Image (tube, rainbow, N blue to C red; front, side):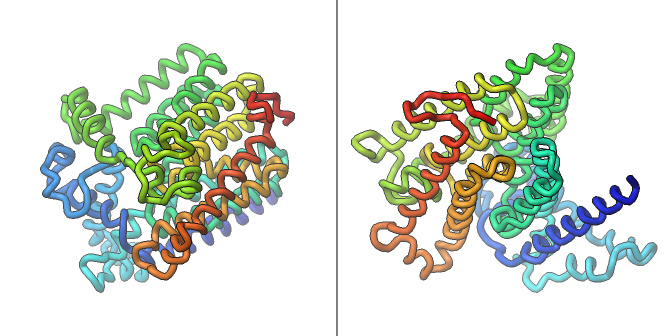
Length: 445
C-alpha cells in the first residue's frame, strides 16, 4: 500500500509541476488587456483605501472602475501587497537559502516599470493554482464515476494541459478557473449532502465574480431534492454570513446594506453590463448577426435577438431541470446539468463574452471522459472555444487574423458558431435532456 501511495504521489507531483511550469513560462508573454486592469485595482486598493475603493470618481481610474465584487479586489490587493513586500525574499534567502536566487531575480527584474514580471505573475497566480486544484478535483470525480484510475488521469491531464485552461488563466490572466473551483466543489459537496460546506463555497464563487449567478435555480433545485439536515443548512448559512462580513467589512465598514445596494447592485452590475447580441462569443447570435457589432435587440428571424436567446435558454433550463428531476441526484447527473446550462448560457444568451463558457468546461470534459458517446462533441466544443479565446484576445493587435475571421461577412465566425451550437445540442441530446419532440426523457446512464 505504501508503494502504491508513493507511486501515485510521484505521478501527481510530476503532473502538477509540469502543469505549473507551463503556466509560469507564459505568465508574462502577453501583458495587456484585463490583467492591467487588475494590476491597477490591486495598486489603488492600497493607494485609495478599501473604504473609498468603489466610490471614488471614475476619472481616478486609468483603465476601468471596479466591476467585480470585494473578494476579487481583495485577491488583487493581496497580490500587489506581496509584490510590494518582495524585500522579504532576499532576507529569507540570506538566512535560510530556502528561496533560490533565481526566484529573487525574477521578482526584481523590471525592465519596464509598467510591465513588472513578478507582479503580473502574482496577479495570475490564484487562477494558476485554481487550475491545479481543478485538475485534482476532476481526477477525483472521474475516478468516483468510472471506477477507473486511467480515465481519471486522462480527465485530469485533459484539463491541466488543455490550451483553453492554460491560456485563460496564465495567458490572459482571468480568474474563471478560481470561480469554477469554488462552484464545481460546491455542487459536488451538495450532491454528497455536505450542505454546510457547499453553501459557503457557492457564496465564495458568486462573491468573487457573479458569472455563476445563472446556476442559482439549479443549485436551489438540487438543494431541495437532497433534503439537507436543518443543522447543516444553519451552519452553511452562518459560515456564508461570516465570510460575507469578513470580506465586505474592509470596503463597507458597518454599512453593509448600503454598500451592497450602491457599490454592488447599482455600480458593479451596471458597469459590467453589455448591449450587444454577442460581445465576443462565437454562439447562436453570431450565426445570424455580426460579432461585437449588432445590438442585442437586432432581429433574428423577425424576433429581437435578446428575446429569442432568452426564450431558447429558458427552454434549455426547463428541460434540464425536468430531466434532472427524473434522475437520481448523482454527481454525474449534476455534471451533465452544469454542462447543459453552462454552455447553454454562453451559446444562447445575448451580450456574452468569449470566456463565459468556462463554467461548463470542466463538466464537459468530465462527462466526455466518463461517457464517450459525448466525447466527439466535447472535443469539437473545446476546439471552437479555444479559437474563440485566441480571436478575442488578439483581434485588436493581430490585424491579419482579424481579417481572416471577419471577411466575407464574418463567414469563419459563423461556421465556428454553427459547429459550437450543434456540438452542444448533440451532446445534450446524447444524454437525453431534449428529445426529438422537445420534451425531456430519461437518460440511460
